[in-house]
Amino acid sequence: MFSELDDYLKEFEMDEYALDYWYDEGFSIAQDMLPQFIEEDWKQLKEQLKNRSLGWKRRLGYCLHDYESLKEIEILCELIDTEDDELFEIVIDSLRSHNIQMILNLNAIKQEH
Image (tube, rainbow, N blue to C red; front, side, top):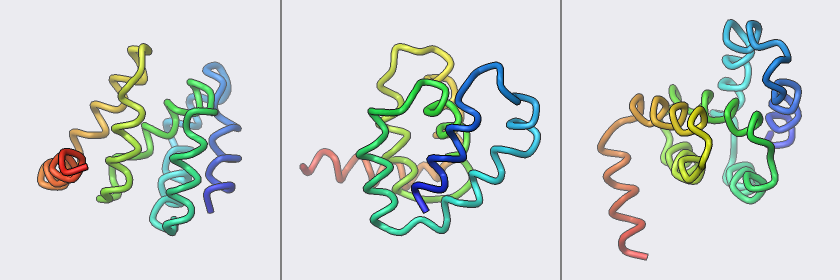
C-alpha cells in the first residue's frame, strides 16, 4: 500500500499542479489509503520520507489528520523538523486534530528510549 500512496502523492508534489483538485478531493483519496497500511507500509514510509520532495511531504502532512494513529503522529514528528514554514504549519495543523493523549504517550515512549 505504501507504493500506491507514494505514487499518488508524486502526482501532486508540484506546487502548481492541480492544487484545487488536491484540496477539494485528492487529499481524501490519499487519506483513505492510510487505514489500509500494515506495519511494513509504515516502516517503508518512515524510511523513504527523507528521500521525498518538499511538495510530497506537504501533501503527506496534510493527509495525516483524521485517522487516529500513533504511526501518523510519529511521521508528523519526523516532518516537523523542517526549515519550510508551510510544511511546519501543515504539520502543526495535523497534530492539533490528533488525540492529545496519543501525543503524550508517544512523548513518554520516546523519553524511555
